[in-house]
Image (cartoon, rainbow, N blue to C red; front, top):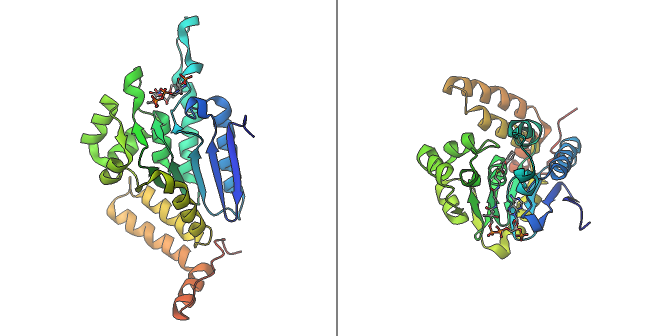
Length: 266
Ligand code: LHQ
């Protein structure tokens, strides 16, 4: 287990994916990309998996690309970083956003470069108070990637997004929460307990409607108000035809806890 780059734990109703290269602050090499993509495919294919958590082993969450694999001192070749992004980073963040179940990121420590933006691509970001988010790209002559130039201004506005991208200033979790960059900063020793509690709640939630809500919020970034109202109508029609909706209302009227299947009706 110790030499696996990604640890996968299948709990009742959810999966936990732990980036596991702690000596490198869980920086991405090709193996980690391949393992994470496969584990996310597994989440999508497993109809009993109703949420997924991504976290990191050791003191960091993820330091972005493994720069040790980018040692140009021995080569005259011009690197093609676009190829790496096309092959790995873009498919990864697209996959995270497209998953129909909630993706929770438990940021246990520093999240730098692509590591920060992969965290921000997740649906709900919880972070240990000691964790910091760094758009480290500016320190090495790169531009933010993995959706950072899109998600940051959406979350915190252009003024803050530009300052972070151009100065690589670290943002600690509590500041990130105050700015609306993440959902919640949590005492370090409580992070994983709170994250698991959230996952347990999602494991018994009306999953289909949550997936539709996530889809609608993403669509709002490019829709007009009128288009969004039409989309909500269509998605509500879909959600309202599910057995989980009937169960939700029935349980409310009967003053009991609902028992959701989280499954598409056949
Ligand atoms: C690392 C790394 C790392 C390898 C720490 N790689 N070893 C996409 C497409 C293609 C190519 C390029 O990139 C991208 C996207 C990107 O992600 S670019 C941005 C890449 N990331 C960075 O520039 C961050 C580099 N790391 C840092 O600035 C610091 O390590 C941070 C601020 C994250 C943490 O600082 P400290 O807490 O002081 O830890 P440290 O620097 O002492 O790191 C601990 C170890 O982890 C150390 O190894 P060592 O053997 O000396 O103990 C670091 O070398 C290693 N490490 N990041 N990205």
